[in-house]
Image (tube, rainbow, N blue to C red; front, side, top):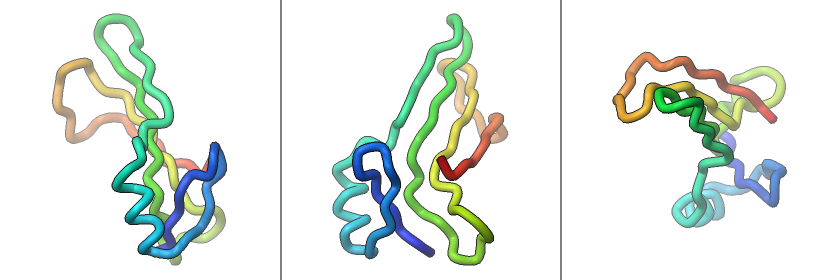
Length: 81
């Protein structure tokens, strides 16, 4: 597993100790948009990239959720940048 932190807006690969310190203090939410009264689109920085994944690691996750509702099978997308 590769570890990443955000350096400004750019992901930077780092060691596990630095990642843990950064992740404990950082707010991983990159964007949050309320779409009307019922839905929220949220993007977070995950910061972990599996070494086995070919190409660029998928470090960000966006999801659409119904406001105020816990959702296990929400619509999610993962991307590198």
